[in-house]
Image (cartoon, rainbow, N blue to C red; front, side, top):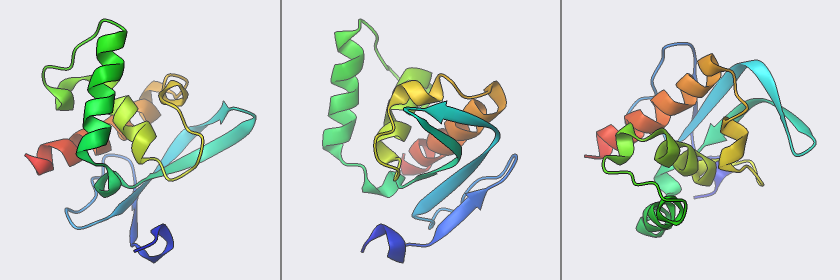
Length: 119
């Protein structure tokens, strides 16, 4: 199934996507500029992630001397996971460092919720 065929749910302030939603769009209160583009929202497909993504994120963190003992509680892990799940091309985890705290928290909440529902 292509991204265009999947249902998308918009996550508003304090909201969570339903368990069966494939795509999640998080709208930002404060637009962020990244690599020459301005973003007012990002869409994530967390269901597209594989074990390879999980292992790659763990390796990235180990390479910089950090560990994610509980991935759902690690901001570093979650932001790397969100970057990999982002449907917009060319989004790196460093974009999330530029978000307002409110918007960063919304993305973190959605990603963390996905991980916790998966357990």
